[in-house]
Image 1 (cartoon, one colour):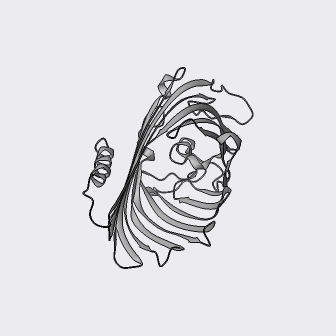
Image 2 (cartoon, one colour):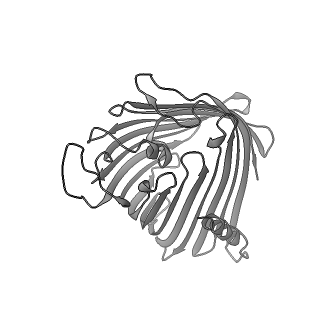
Image 3 (cartoon, helix red, strand yellow):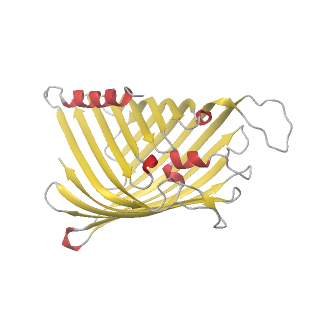
Amino acid sequence: MRSTLPLLLLLLLTGLALPVRAQAVREGSLRLSAGTLVDGNAPRDFTETDGSGASAQPDVGLHLLGSAAGRYTAERYQLVGRYDLGTRLYLRYRSQSLLVQAGTVEASHALGPTLGAGVEARAKDRRGGARAYSDLGASAFLEYVPDVRLDVRLRAGAHRFVYRPDERADFGGPELSLTGRYRIDRRHSLSASGEWGRRRYGVGAQSAPELVSPALGRREDQELSAGVGYAYRGPVALSFGYGFQELASNSYGETLLRHRLSASAGVHLPLQFTLLAQGALVLSHYPDGVFLSPDIILTEDEEAQNNLSLRLVRPLTRSLDLELSGGIYGTRLPRNGLSYTRSMAGVGVTWRL
């Protein structure tokens, strides 16, 4: 894993360094952010839903983030890349300080006026804290773009997840997805997606406690998800989405059904301020009555939580922004008797190039 993300960054920089040919376009951007925050639950602890049990104390932290992105487009091919490196340092819960890096690279080639093919790779690595993990993926895709209004992408690849505190949560397997977007006009657009995946683990499947059954073999999960969305871009930017996920496992306590409603908005305010808001409501159902992986839903999938966040941005210069942010996140596992709540607020600056 140590060599994966630097390799992605090298590919990105190589694409930006390619010589400019006729009709070729190079684009790039760089962002650096720094700030302080107050975190109401830095260790991400669950508490009893009846209010009993010790709760985490608020902590003050420092966050730093750097992002580089680039695109090289020629007549029939394109190379796109992005690399992010961030850290968060806490004063009270120093063991929860972390370093996160993520990178993506995509290369595509036009097969004709409406059809293209390509490959993509992504990697995310989180170190520090109690929930360190690495998330890797690679795939090939076909893209159909008959006009400026419609684009459809079919993707097939492989996914590998490594959860460092507990190797029993490690999995790997194939994935297949189909996504599409239709632009009604310059302000309105619709999107839809569907995905299938198989997750194979290195441990045996668990049977229900009340059952005595022969060995079930290795644990395997089948994941099905689908979603639809609408976006409006005008004086106010709005988006709404609905997603459904089914994670069916042959291991007791690992099956779940999830519905997710999401919305976001952005609006310009007086004095050059911009307000950005987003939120989500998540409804989960556990057919076995319990869910035995509370750590994973907070580690692998941040979007599994109910959340509401606000960001207020004001430019100080042409390349420097001031940002104020706040958010609250939460989820409940009622049959487990556990709940999770986290509130955050911060102030920072972002420099753009």
